[in-house]
Amino acid sequence: MKLPARQRTTRDLKSLQRLMTATLMRPLTGTNRLQGRWTDGRTMKAVAESFIKPNDRLTSIERLQIYARCYWFRLIDSLYEDCPGLRAVLGDKKFLRLAEAYLARYPSRSFTLRNLCRRLEKFIREEPRLTAPHTALARDVVRFEWAQTVAFDGEELPPLTADDIADHPPTRLRLGLQPYLSLLALDHGADDFVIAVKKQSEVRTDASNTPTAAPHAAKLRHVPLPKPGRVYLAVHRHDTLLYYKRLEPAAYRILRSLQAGRTIVQAVAGVRGVEPDKLQAWFKNWVELGWLCRPG
Image (cartoon, rainbow, N blue to C red; front, side):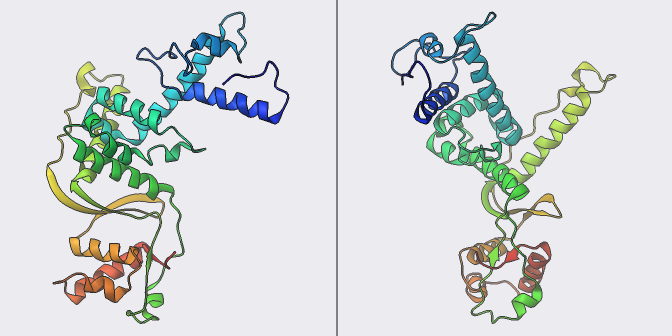
């Protein structure tokens, strides 16, 4: 992409914006510098000089490199903040390699960093070598961590009350679930693991900020990786706080059926061996938590 000497039209301005964006989103080298060549073979020095002026302190490519580093460092820092569990599973070096490869394939397209991890599980499925030998655990942890993001600021619809449900025959009544609620069937106890990692991080931070602490006080024991085992979870919020709740398999299947648009009778018929009192208690609890709403 070559730019005209002067920007005269809106089209020229868009071309400049596209070029600037492309140079910033191009992955850095291992030493956190701009790559030496552009996609068409030109030197990055020549590309930078085509649209950025030098000043009395920095060359064109040095000025561009500052912006590129800011872009990449901010995104990677955001991944560190949003994925403490995944980082604990992989270790810092493997996590950084995964983060850079992920951002290169799925760069940020949103106005908010909130959506940065939306496709991270998909990427792990596509590139399992980057998380081996803990790919299954990494996927579970990423799903749990993304569910917390959804629960934090996902849309909330008017919840249904017990009277709303009682006013309709169960053979015809379909219930929706809140958009902020995520139902997860995991192969590891990712919930307890991520919570333990976060608690460890909090203790490490407190220790490192204590003037009288010994130098080794911040070196905490590694959180053991969870062993394989089926876990059913609901990740949600209540009174503006995040929660996760383990579910019995039957309760999970009922909620998934309701989420898929089945009636209450159809959803309950899909499970066996659950006493009516327990079913009633589940629905009562889901209403109290505000999980149930009208179908979207």
